[in-house]
Image (cartoon, rainbow, N blue to C red; front, top):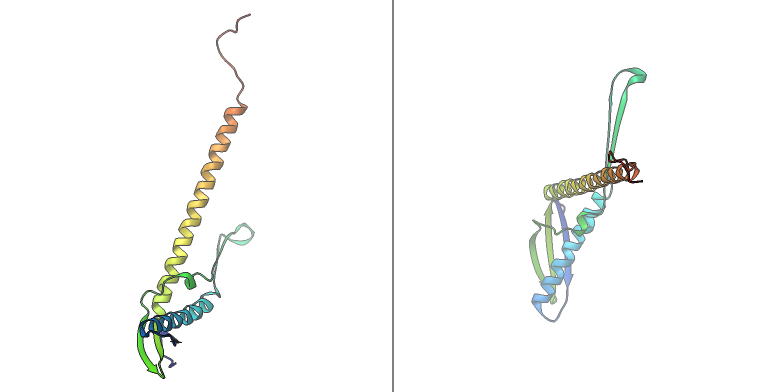
Length: 151
């Protein structure tokens, strides 16, 4: 397949008894080839953030590391385009392209959604801890009353 700046290119082929089935299988194979290329590109994405504030030994630091991997291979390749379809000796060949900017957009969206989900889970965990602590306080309360107990 040709190399295009800013595009992933996938080529698939198929030889089936029906042309329409050959075309669908060839397109699926071409998109799978692109998905594998996208996955291997995204597999190595690592974001490392370090922030420090203050002076000397009184400084405090914040560190955040985020890793995104193997997510896009499970996504639909929105925006992929069938550029060319050819038939040679009854075999169907299909070339599909996929814009790298679309890959970036999907990766960002996936990372944001994962972060939101993690934040929601963390907030739920903290709320449960708060209610557990409140329940413990109620359980630990002494049974005191201002009313005299009958003797």
